[in-house]
Image 1 (cartoon, protein in one colour):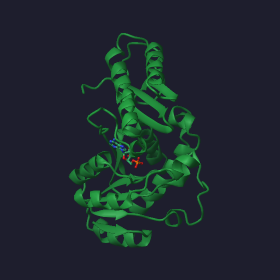
Image 2 (cartoon, protein in one colour):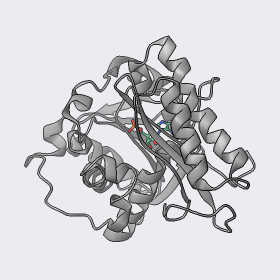
Image 3 (cartoon, helix red, strand yellow):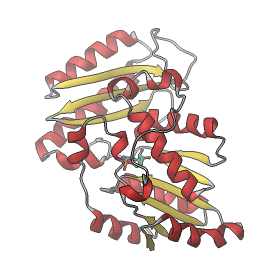
Length: 285
Ligand code: AMP
């Protein structure tokens, strides 16, 4: 694996490859890598000739400065994992490299209602920051394919919208959520949970499965009330949302039966750590 810290050096490396028609897959991350991230690297390796991973903890997407300050940094281990996964290129820029003119947003991305609900509602400006950094990184890497995790379902929709708005031709590929054996979705933020809390946190996935098992018999509002209660009783101190939505546009659903594809989404705090997860309700798995 070759490590680049500057845009110039990375682009020089990729230039000849692109001119020779070599396909490039891109996996943007904020580091503290786990098997979920590595599954994106594997997917990219099966579809593209070269895989570029970036590690950059983007300050502009944190609505809570404490969350940014506490974000885990494990760069030596990340490099080791990426080497083992046979990632071809790691881009590890400084904040100054990505934001030479400062972090102020110069473009307001038109995300419409997508920005007003769920993560958009509870994390003001978060998706503008995500678009700002992903747009910048896509301009730098110009990949053929971009690999993102279903773990951040709404983020995938936002980035699909970004691709439409900007006319960038990169194809977005969404990879399934990797979970611990307990069902807990892998996340860099899990590092901030102790073993007892990791056990408690499995209630999120159990709740999503409960919704999936019952969504053809019970009203969304009843399922949401039951699951909210269940999370609070199991040690979660604050629930941002439990939602059952149209999987195509994230509009909330109110009826039991629906011909629309459905997704259930949860965001909740356990001992100060904000966890999110989601589950498609109509697929076979
Ligand atoms: P992050 O470093 O948290 O910004 O995540 C980088 C990418 O990895 C995003 O596209 C995430 O959706 C994806 N990702 C995070 N956790 C998982 C997981 N458990 N399974 C699959 N992909 C994941």
